[in-house]
Image 1 (cartoon, rainbow, N blue to C red):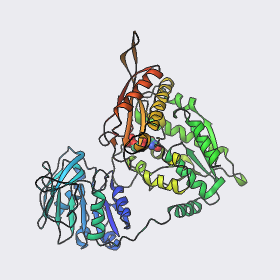
Image 2: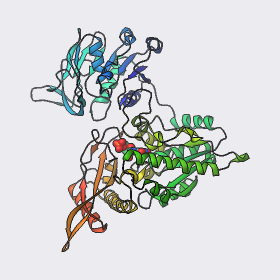
Image 3: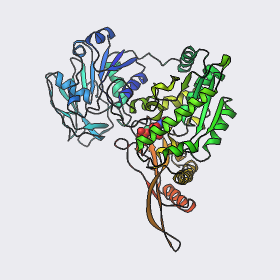
Image 4: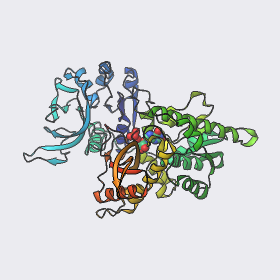
Length: 528
Ligand code: XMP
């Protein structure tokens, strides 16, 4: 088994996932576990994660001495490489400025980690890798016994190895999918270098999960907030499988849904799945509380708080056998939500508070049931398919819990929501209709998430003989497999132009359409 020590990177969980994909068992623990813990764990190999370390203080984080005494292979990633260098006698230059982005790395010498692993070969015959790298802090002097394994012009020591000891380190991130050979490198480290057999399989997740839910819940009642998004839908199907009518789904129409969304969700869950669904109409309540609020975090908190209130009111109404109310609140929280809300044990920077994690007051009075908490989006989809949910539901683009509340920038006004709903509907309709001739797939299926953002600014236009002074929307479409990093989708211009002209012609009040080409990071997928 492999021990992953977490220094607080946003993407540590991805290392675990890649190791699982190599069919090797692993556990992630904070970087400050005791030496005894490491000895008792008896790993065959250790991986040191990256870190969000951005202050000088964080640069003091070190791997426990037992890592170096364990006599097993160690792989350092990004910050993990720097701490390896510092602890083993090399030198690092720390910098307060870091960038995370695409780089081409040259592999040097023949190392067991990188030999023969490459994306292309230069004219001079150098093997090259396409990677995602953190620039900023870097190793400037190799520790004794180490040789150079990889370099870029701006980072001369981008990888180092001490093959006698089985120590390897890379400045880039092999765990993110943008590093094309990253999974191959991690596979090689855990199987060939650390010698793990690779016969571990993820078991039957549904059976395990169903058994766990039944054991947790017993005969108590559960309510679940159904948003119509992929996560809450899969959670609902999984919990419904486990406990049937002990589950009541509460579908809150907060007035921040996509066009016709309410009807669609009801048709699917009440109609097709025969689950108990309560449809709560709460648009006025939500929009009322959002009035005059412009700060994104404040908006999320308000929406989260209102959700909790609605749930509590519904929970109070739901009486099971013997007059006991619902005791559990189930949610489709998935792993990236936990990380990005700063909810794991180690230090993580809080990026956004996702309402289904951060907004819950401790006085909720309901126990939390979150069966998807350890999974990534695509794992959740696999699970949905395995549960027999229709593909069009499972492969729907994800939709955030706060809904259009975070897609109307600044203050959420009913007028803005309505303009956005109609513009977004046109965008999605065209994405579904337009087939890419090379792949034969629709652009909806070729993108991981696509939506429209309403910008509360007016710009000047001309229509017919008249000057217009109306609002702007931005289209956003991204490709990603894990939603932790993402690239903007290269939609055909013809499609973008068609969407733009339809929106401007059909949605009175919008006279300009932009396309967002930023990647995550440094941008996020949503605009708020
Ligand atoms: P960001 O904008 O953080 O989004 O790059 C990553 C993914 O998470 C979704 N998202 C949310 N989902 N509640 C949710 O359930 C939220 O508050 C929330 N905020 C963002 C986003 O749509 C994307 O798929």
